[in-house]
Length: 294
Image (tube, rainbow, N blue to C red; front, side, top):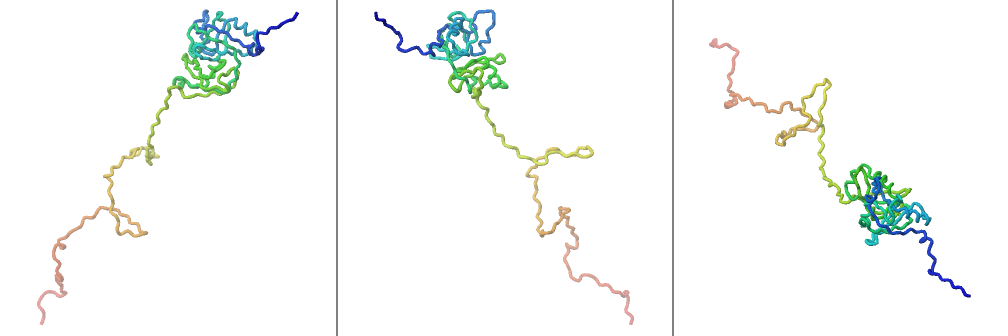
């Protein structure tokens, strides 16, 4: 009696695919999560809530930690990556942050494919704030680094949301290294920023430098009295400036001090007005006037 063996697969299934988790869930936002506890903390990060059956299946697959997942919306061909926060959701349902549903273009109750993945550790990431209001934060880099503690991974092209001082700030992931999707758990990552969306640099107005004016201050007396001088110089009208009379008798090496520049009035006498007559005077004799003795 001969024996026959039948093998359905021509090639054995790779071990990597045997240890991969892949399931489809209906997704809802965190606000739809039933329970007395406030789960607003889920909105502040990049992790989802899955059902307990997912934890049982993941433990049997012996996947590597930390658990990272790839979320895909097959209808819109959009995908992102995330971590898991808890396994307390109802069966067949997972809860996502609102910003993650917006990136995937998912509505309440939409189908999302969840697959386990292994991502490289991030070394560099670049963000672009979606509003100039982000510049109002005193130390934006420290605020972002603190908010990223609630995230497990980053995907290039995603628009993440962080909460600071009861205000939501959205930032687009412009670039990640060494891959387009990276893990940011226990990593040393350099963070950089692009100019915010819609930001315009202020116009620089050129201001002409003012001409310096020498000796514009006021002096002080030793006796404490104020000098009768105005602290600022009085502007001089060009019409008040009079040109002096040059000294045509100037000689090199000689200094002439002019005490009074006003012209002296010329004295006129009556003799100058009369005509000059030569020898017009009268002679005098030493002899007494009288008759001459014979």
